[in-house]
Amino acid sequence: MGVVLPEKEARLKILRCYLKCVDIFSERVAKGFAWLTVILILGMVYSTLMRYLFSKPPLWTYDLVYHCANVMWMMGLAYVMRIKGNVSINIFYRKLPPRKQALADIFLSLIFFWPLVFALLYFSLIHVPFSWRLGERAVESVIRIPIYPLKTVILVAWLMLLFQGVAELMRNVFFLATGRKLQWK
Image (cartoon, rainbow, N blue to C red; front, side, top):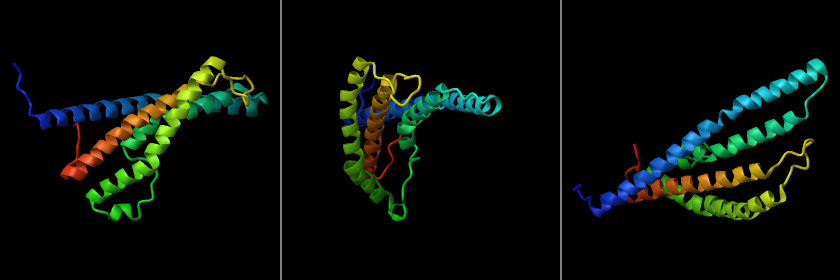
């Protein structure tokens, strides 16, 4: 028989497991989709060469570059949140002690992040199935590329951001309560 962990340690183990799963998933997805950069660059180079060397710009490359770029940044959102790579104005924030930084993170996420995530998830859950049923295609596209897969990526990106947001909130609440960082490593 295994050793039974005390209740606090068991909860801490579950929290760390959640953090590990979300962090690793966010990182792998972001790094996997970062390879779209290669396709994006090849598409742009091909388009430029065709336009300036042969005066025949391929119209489909606009759609390729547009969709690759959008999918790339959307699938990297959760990872950017994890590594705190988002743009912030931290004139006051960096002068705060760590506990007050955690409190500011919690407060600001409750005001700005969570309402935005829930609103976008709500609307995505409405629009994505509708887009699939319609077989929606881009109107600005010359080749009328299907956009329902792109709308699905939006939904997946917001779900990933939701899970990463929960992880960051748990880290901040834990730090605020204990003064220790909650890490899975």
